[in-house]
Length: 46
Image 1 (tube, rainbow, N blue to C red):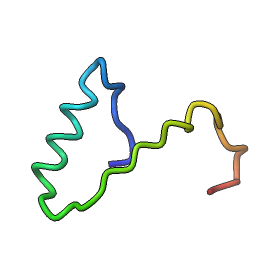
Image 2 (image 1 turned 180 degrees about the vertical axis):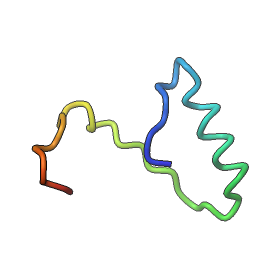
Image 3 (image 1 turned 90 degrees about the vertical axis):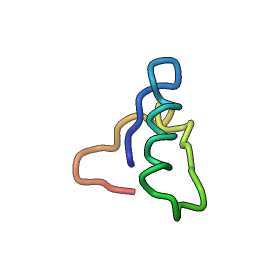
Image 4 (image 1 turned 45 degrees about the vertical axis):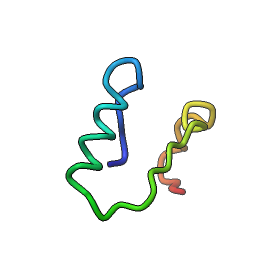
């Protein structure tokens, strides 16, 4: 999963469902800085 709805509109349920479908998952990383960084210029990737 690379995108998730905000927690108030179903985000926690989406993560729980993903974890149910991926029982071998060992870690969930939530990037809280994505909105602060903004969009990368076209042609640039992380």
